[in-house]
Length: 394
Image (cartoon, rainbow, N blue to C red; front, side):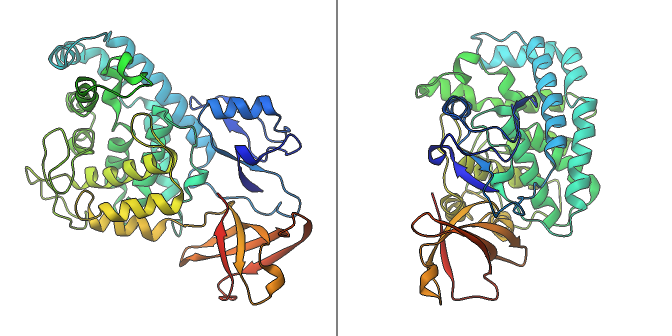
């Protein structure tokens, strides 16, 4: 299978993957021809690309970090929990203090729904799956792809954060604390007035300030729940803080150290929040976010993260992210731009497999000439054939 941008798909192409709503419900099953009406609907939901069946690439099945079944289980539980919490907080146009008071007064009801049993069960599967993998390759194109949805965002950020936690060799308990913090990092958004969350225009300064209060609202909800570790609650409060003190809500600083030990120091960004900060920004750059960013290419997203390492983002976490992100993800279309065999220049293919120890040298399958004629698939191992150069097709 090959990942195509929706703009490059025609009516004869066949969907190679089943697609689901952010809530976990089936949207479109694999095997359907991607007619214009389907493509238009997918765009409306924020999807930019899908896997398509291409003859000769049947063996190319991009691996998901967490199975879509478990991701759907989390999405359904998260969706229900969020709706129940929102129903317990009838927020309209109140100010920040009034909302905080409302959260405190509704503590008894909120605690019933925060980190529900379904979410806890799904998170344990997330942790088990990631710790059970011999190596981690973070293929962002195989995470949930609907742009701007809070459920999708929370799940993606959690997967990225847990992959980073594995690379730092966190214990099982540390992974769970990190995961609880990540999946709930934007919990406070349910207390932000919907007029702000759903606004399509640029936010006013006052609206932007209220949106930033989601960190305080989320922390307050989590910290008054006795089942939530304080370290997880700290993630909700601090995941928008920056190493140089330019973040919010308190403007605290980081120390750019490996996030390996917790000395419970005050006025320093918690190590779990530093990880989620990097995961949150990278997910936003890759998939896009309302009010903040349009989707970036894998190369541009990682370049931006690297630029911010050391000043805004923890440099050690950034280095670790770079070590697990393939710039040529499995399933992506590529074009040969230089090769020892000149006839191959211009050939189109797909990234078939990433090598964890050499992410810049994937295995390719070429299936089309530069004149768009299909050919018998050609397998190219770029580790062995170092003279081959290729580029991603936008």
